[in-house]
Amino acid sequence: MMGDMTDPNSDEYASALDAADALRSFRTEFLIPRHGDHEQAYFCGNSLGLQPRGVRAHIEQVLDKWAEEAVEGHFREPAPWMPYHALVREPLAALVGAQPREVVAMNSLTTNLHLMMVSFYRPTRERPAILMEAGAFPSDRHALESQIRFHGFDPATDLIELEPDEEDGTFSMQAIERAIAEHGPRLALVLWPGVQYRTGQAFELRQIADLAHAAGAIAGFDLAHAVGNLPLQLHDSGADFAVWCHYKYMNAGPGAVAGCFVHERHADTDRPRFAGWWGHDQGTRFRMGPEFVPTPGADGWQLSNPPVLGLAPLRASLDLFERAGMQVLRAKSRRLTGYLEQLIQAHLSGTLQIVTPREPERRGCQLSLRVVAGRGLAGREAGRDLFDYLAVHGVLGDWREPDVIRISPAPLYNHHADVLRFVRAVEAWRRTA
Ligand SMILES: *Cc1c(COP(=O)(O)O)cnc(C)c1O
Image (cartoon, rainbow, N blue to C red; front, side, top):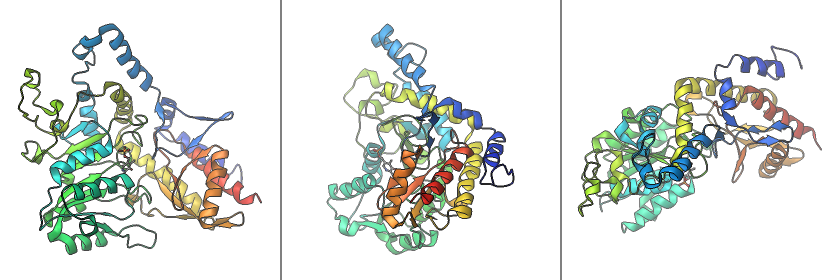
């Protein structure tokens, strides 16, 4: 088998795919964790993306500026701190398919979700309900449930959690459509993921936003697993708002400053909001008057002056996305994840079950895998055993309770050779008694 260029399960085949990959050199822009004498096969970009080498220079620039200019660093070129968040505006807008004033980098994901809900979840007695997916990321559920209680409503009746209708735990669009039709008159908000974190299923934002709007509800999205993973057209999707983080596929570092989108039609909204001085009209902010006049667009939801050290890595990250191009990244991602799928089907089908939808349009980088059996174990036990074995052998995925291993080849830094290493490691695990 080894040495056969036509056998997908060979080093030669994986090397040939890597040699033909126009993005292969982007890997050198990242610091790849070591495993003994080798680099790790890192598949956790859906949890914490790797560090771009360019990050250090951006952080040092801030530290040097602080040392040399102190308070004047707010105003002095280059990269003055006062409008520091504006440095990422254009590339971020391009990345998510938004107009520049529709996006802002601020706070953390869950904070932004709450701030958006303050403005866009306005329950009434007739329309108090929120529709979300069952099994959502806990933070999102906590945020939604606590907002419902905050408004004096009851999550037992007003938080509607749609159960997956497909056998593998994914959703058909018909199920979403039916739920919105069924609950439509009571729905204040549909809050849906761009990519579901556990199954890796990707959704058509436009379709969901249209359905929500037709029912008279607001459409909001959590794009934690979609941004930097799939090309997005947020403006055209018609979504009212969206929130996401930058430490997953965006590689902007642990706890990185998050992102927020507010559709242009709400740019001058008089909806209530929780306000802070940085959301105040930029022209008059420093008159320090008592009355809040919001800056139009997403910037109007900012509370505080930008966390410059936290934003610095995002500049390095966005440079890479700009250089690579999201469409090119996506094309590679389809090949890379497709290669993983192909090898699993051909060689590991009795061992691993793919949870993630098989159609490339319905997923991003990630494949969620359930371990059927191996090494005399079955189900969750086999899963934990394999997961630990992989980690010990320098192949890092992540584990999501109750029984899912997530493997996310990231097109910026993973090679086909990494995918082959994963498959080889699973084969080796199977062989060990
Ligand atoms: C990663 C993730 C979070 C994490 O929220 P933080 O506020 O960044 O800690 C929340 N929701 C979803 C769907 C996620 O994938």
